[in-house]
Length: 463
Image (tube, rainbow, N blue to C red; front, side):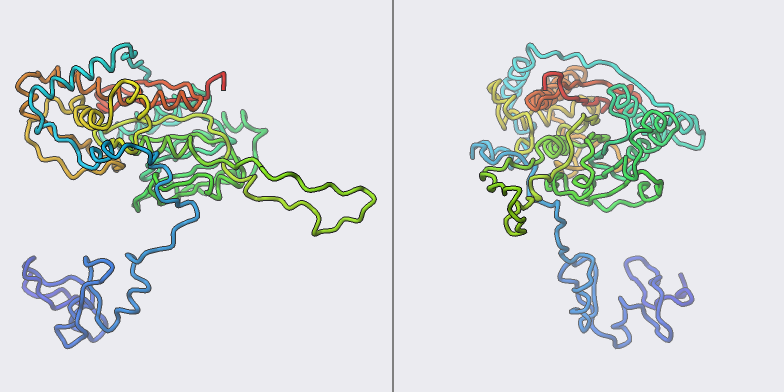
């Protein structure tokens, strides 16, 4: 670029070999970032976020409105409420602080881990039912030629999840759907589209109220191109919470305490520990405690009513959301799980396993989806509660040359699936202790996604 663009900054960015493209104020030559070039105030790095700068003489004003400033926590934010119990042995906690590297294991140690894995899965039903379903509300989009391969794959997954919700009797109005790791909110979008059709409106005509359908979207990141903001229909409430699942107390969410509609948990590809956090959030939400103090003395009908003597209503006794009717969560990225968040700790301990074995099995679980990948690939820094955006690929854990020496690619894939199944079996055990009948199903073909297992649960008949 031989000269700056009209109305743009005259500062030449040496690194980019071009002039700055920021607009300038009337009569100015440089933008605010480069105002020092013409005698303006010195620019300094923002103390709250060094990624941007601010004029030194305007620092105080900037700190009051900087987007990186600490904001007040919402009422439903409770630090680490869903992180898991804190009574884990200190030795086990020490193991969880560092991710176990398979490359640091000797062949003898790896063989010992495989023996423990085989012993742990003995007696467990390892067959996952094939159950590829669909829902008619997505058929038009599934046959839309404008959708590319990536969009088509996501539509197939969303269609099957809705099909399972309907098969379990969960897809109905008069309840609140809580979508964990909502991202752009596409799953909630299709749930709403399905429930506003004539079929459901006629079936649930007796449930019609102003707020007979609620959709609560939980996502910790700020998301672009959200679809929930486009819904303005009467009879439905959309609400988005920007909060990490491990800090979310559902009993303090105003939307859930107003109508107390029954809850249905949903999620599409909740990575690693996010699944465990969501299960705790949904099923271990604090409930109102029963009143322990004796009731106040009743007044005789002949006595005048003294306002000071009337019993006071304790709002805490009537708080909390409605009951949980069920859930449908697509699982993935078991190598991102963490022992401290894992809901199946008791299940592992009953089999003589602990945090050390759990961490190793988590790493080995990635062989189920990347057993044919080249070895020695540098993985990105792990984030145990990561929720990927929709087109993002599954991130693999490390491979091990030691393993490649005595396990073929097919054997590694089989071992990886056993690890995934063992981890999921702990989740099924957790759901059983909470009074739910749960199942694992392959809800789409492996050609759509290798992470094709759906965890479903409904209250057991006995509960």
